Image 1 (spheres, one colour):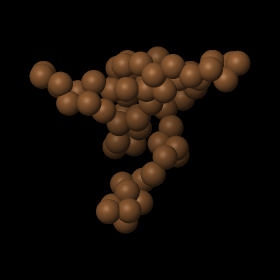
Image 2 (cartoon, helix red, strand yellow):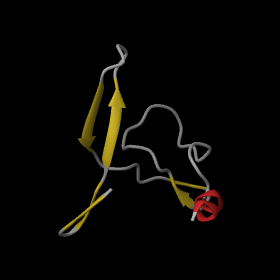
Image 3 (cartoon, helix red, strand yellow):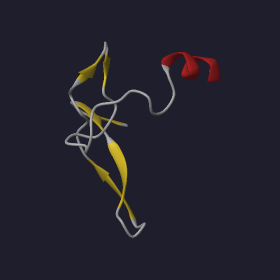
Image 4 (cartoon, one colour):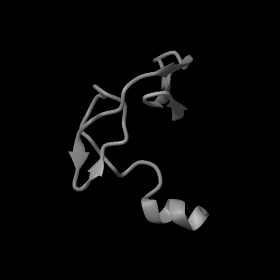
Length: 63
């Protein structure tokens, strides 16, 4: 994330099928899963899933 006048810019790292990567700004998914935001890029494939990455508790423990 990057703070900008008027809000946040969300930076995402994308990989293609050949393993090349691209860093770009894209909006995040606006759907809510259970009681939390999805945390994936807008129009992502598959379902919204919170099982990736750290939980809030795990992030707090990293402190």
